[in-house]
Image 1 (tube, one colour):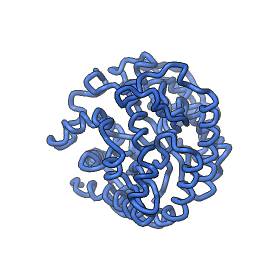
Image 2 (cartoon, helix red, strand yellow; image 1 turned 30 degrees about the horizontal axis):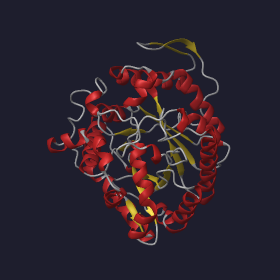
Image 3 (cartoon, helix red, strand yellow; image 1 turned 180 degrees about the horizontal axis):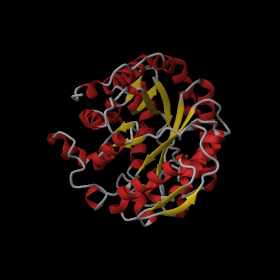
Image 4 (cartoon, helix red, strand yellow; image 1 turned 90 degrees about the vertical axis):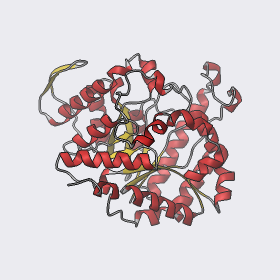
Length: 390
């Protein structure tokens, strides 16, 4: 099993003092401290360097805008810094929000990053949260078409000597990319999929590995539909196609984990919902049948999942997270990976503006007590893919 740490690079100062009725409102300039941001970036790069030294397989980071949830407005800039601080582990950009950016620029930057890292980039792609479309002034109804067009341009630029493209949103004539990626024909591409059958079908059509949403029955149905779509293209889903995201924390016991990590996880929920746009206000972002791949009894819950996250507490979050002793955490992660058939796990254990010394202790403790067990465990099958007729 491959083990990545998923690092959201939260703004490093707790902002709970600004909460109104349990939620963070939109914050003005006075809430931002530039020196906190300086320290946040420096500390996370230090942490990633330590992960590399301790043998983690990779670090992942994503793209968001206008929120203390994460200071990763440009994941490519973070990746560039990380290429100079790490030597072995993969750098998973998870991911560039394709509908919001110039595709040729993205193709160039990822090629540069693959050279800077000597072939350690995984080029995650995503559509992004509704908030980002409001910030950039991109109509949500154009999201899917822009995503598809951007990806096609990136692949064309990476793989063709001379590349031209006439599209709805972008056009290029006689382009020759320089430099080109180290990894041929281009870096591995991954995509997160949660509430849209079109994303699942796109991933299968391009044979792109997926991170299938939240856990439980919804994750099972995502994998089933993905496997069915892969079968239409004559392919079988293997553990290399599946990676799952898990929240974990190692302590002396479950109770100790709740006491130590619970307050940070609870604050994380406030960050997670900062600037949240409800699904009913996301006109055009999802198709009418976006959840059609799910069992009927799951569709209502899936549609309202994001809106309900804010109601969680640290205790009920711990019930579904992988918190506890090293033995408990290792076994629960293995069980989750076996259940999903996931050959890679993306682990979060620094939610909610956790202090740096606490984060580094967790990186070391996990590396000593859990990481070797996970990396020694081989996932052999994707059980829900096996249910799909060949």
